[in-house]
Length: 449
Image (cartoon, rainbow, N blue to C red; front, side):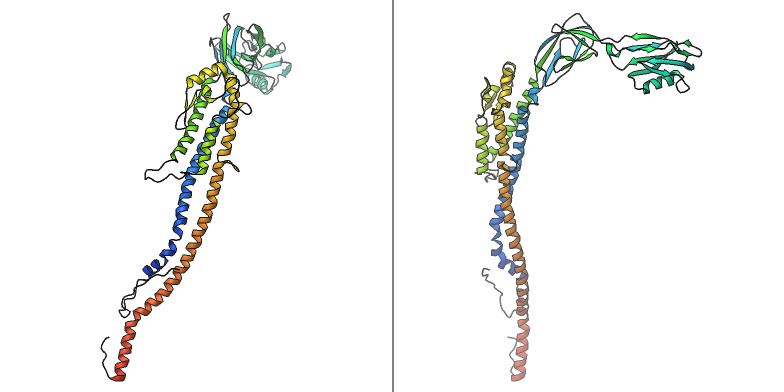
């Protein structure tokens, strides 16, 4: 403990001294030991804040790049259009579709088989039996009305939907096949079915089951449904009307979504660079930013910039400038969407390879980002955060230990100085007693001094 000069004034004044102030003065130099520790701790915590932001920005950049390097990402998307949406409407074009143009002629639409009975009184009691799709429904008390017979057919699970249709002429039993096209053609035998007041009940064909007929690129195709997914690989379209005129179906790559994904990548890259550029300067108060001169920051800057020019070429595409991406003086990027769209239309497969082939720009940059971010155990930001955490833990331990030592010391000093203070305050009364004893013994009046 360092030496502290104390001035108590006159020892016989009886005023003593301020114990709290004296203890504080004694411990001031001891407290100063913590100052550099706390300064360093504050600096490390400020670095942590920036590293967290930088880690988040790098993670966003990694995600945006992944949408371009993923084999099932935006480059696998397809878009489609129909030249006559009154005849044919495009439903979807999945990742297996190939960009190109197709000519479709819709000769006839698919039809679903249906049959309907003659007019029957809704309250008429039925008898006999009816055979539908080979299943015999024998009439008894549980199904001897149109409503109960309809319910029995629906619950039988034979792929037929039954319903009762009622209009001004009376009621009829309608049967509709659950399978469209020729394969769903209904077979109904009602020769044994009759009504108590209606007599024999006959069924007539409402609509015959029929497959759609069309030609695709000159090839005849049939479909049991008007939703066609077997004519063009990866493409599903809906037939809406027959027509003698050809419909042009265009399948294109998802250039719009690709451009959006590339733009997101550029934005995410610029966020990382802007954050790093900020750390190379000073704040509004003129103090250096938390990561000013930090070796981890310098390493991230170097490797990130280097990754822009790494990776093997793919056909005619060998660098990002051919994708419309240019490097600015401050390290940020700028995207020319017109150039990107042109190269997508003229060299789509080479662009895909440049981003997705083994050893390509996209794959190389993905590896670089994994090594720079917060991924354990080797990410640069992760390692820097771990190193800071270790230092912060040691500094906090030192501060805690020093605080404990100072607290114990403060208690001891306070006790000792309170005792000394009490002694000083009692000196005047002790002197008075001595004077009185002296006067009593000698008869000499010493006065008050």
